[in-house]
Image 1: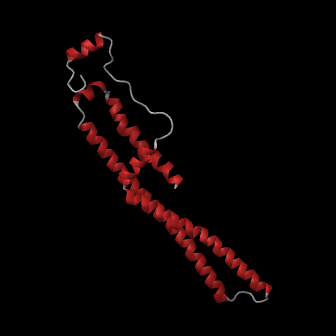
Image 2: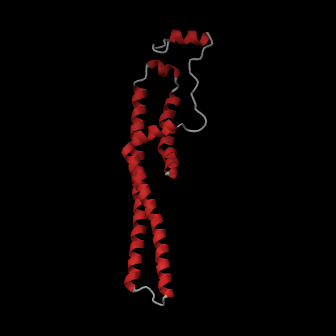
Image 3: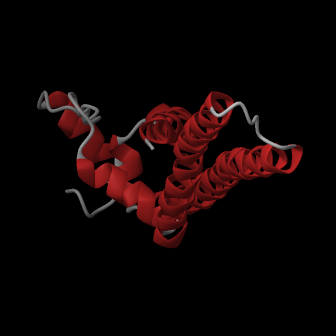
Length: 175
């Protein structure tokens, strides 16, 4: 009788027949399925996910390029010292300026990445919480007969905590 409301008489009959009134809690074990990450990405917005990867790539490119620029600067300075003509003040300022631009662009990339990830976390959290609320509120009454209130509250508390804190943390470490 999953679709119908269980009367007190039905509950008593179930207890007498040895059947469980409360279902066992379902629990997945092992690694997280890729579909869970995809669902989370869609919940926060695919555009934001793409922007995160682009900004991260550009920021990392600037960080790497600054290292190459520093190596080029050192090579040019070494060549100039070998010729007994050290770099002029304007040449040094040019190399310092370009190095600073790459460094600032790298920092700006990290800052934007953090802001974009925070935006995605907020969008995903609100959407997933709203979806969960709608599904609970639209569940048949029989669901509430066989599901303890604590288990329902656990979905809102512990599971949403994992979605809000642990999942984004592990994802941002992988980016």
